[in-house]
Image (cartoon, rainbow, N blue to C red; front, top):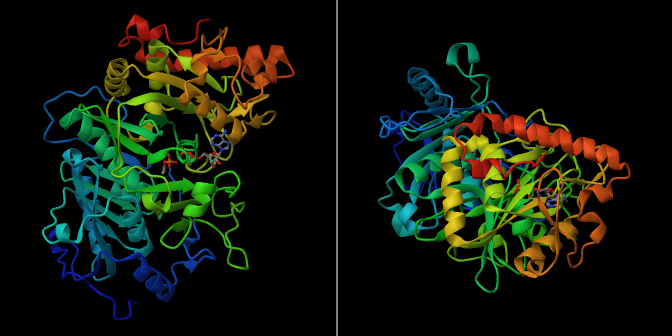
Length: 532
Ligand SMILES: Nc1ncnc2c1ncn2[C@@H]1O[C@H](COP(=O)(O)OP(=O)(O)O)[C@@H](O)[C@H]1O
Ligand SMILES: C=C(OP(=O)(O)O)C(=O)O
């Protein structure tokens, strides 16, 4: 219960179908702490951050997304094969059930927006069953000025009801949890899962349609930061490959850790106002910026606390997908506003579970396009349900689950922008070295950081490169602060023959995966793939 707490604005939710609910509007982090303790939805951690233990697995389920067509553009044929249409009647019925479920409850409403560049801004109203999920929206979306709240007009709403479980046989969902985007009604409907990642990734998926289709801007699943010389770097990567970790660099201003747009005005802007970092095995020594961002206002999700109230970062008993969300200003060195210029360097992060790809290689434009469409990585334990050990995976554009359009739509835009900006593109393997997963080890973070630093400082421009015989990738032969012996992956394997076999196996997987794009890819792109 909310003891004498504010409802800062009398808010009618009936227009959404939610009746007689008590709506707590724009809850502040401080108030959340009071409520949370009263409602017993979470516990205070030793740091003063809020630790939320949902007691059930919360993470992404690979099958919980459906996309509904956009009515405004229904006449335009988008070459899309990833979106799965969900019957609009079924959507309406399920929506009614969810709002009935929320009616007469005490619920939490927040007005916020996405996109740091005003030309692309969309206003978002987030309606949550739980107070802590509402604070997640405060942490992760952009926070309007008080004066902007007076006449706030939402473009999209997110309705988030973790306690509501769908009945797949009646509701047409594939399981009890679901995350549905209705582009016609501009609603993200999330139920059956407390994973707050769905709230941000729902709006991300919407923007991945809206920006290219309506605004001629390229949306990207990437982090970004700016160096002292004003040079922007962008880090693409599927979940767990290092976007958040590697963009948090005290020497560079953070733009954002996960979702950005690249505009026709030659700028990069963050969609979000916060970060959502993995905290599994987090240490102050390895990741000081993220560690120190855990302070009052941050929300730790799915973590277990020690008896003394400190966080047990090694504990994965709920899920390996332990997380913390915090506003961007919990990081010391940030770009304000979260906007940078055209990137000088782009990194494609891959966590190669085969231990085959070099830890860093420089890509030709053809290789850049090929690897972007392929989106090869390993899914690491955590973000997706059912992934307990690294699994090789191809996720187009390094983010297929969130990309409603066909990968070629994004790849074409990216190729053109990369060419115009004359950007350096690097493939960085943050995954295994010295053997595949099970035999080798994950690349040491300090080496990955050193390689990225050398690329950013232009030091890799001056060194010699050798070509990988199977992938055709150009590998530097030396790099400051990195043992030369690890730059060529074959050298790190004790059994060279096994390396060649694994490399051929991976090359064949690339080719098999790319078959579906062959008809629509020009010769140049195809030449960016494995060379044998
Ligand atoms: N060499 C490495 N480079 C980057 N991350 C690494 C490396 N080795 C281990 N890690 C760990 O991998 C995880 C990367 O996660 P994160 O940066 O949140 O990925 P993303 O933002 O792409 O989802 C972190 O837990 C980090 O500590
Ligand atoms: C939040 C997510 O993305 P990332 O792991 O890239 O932060 C997610 O996929 O649920």
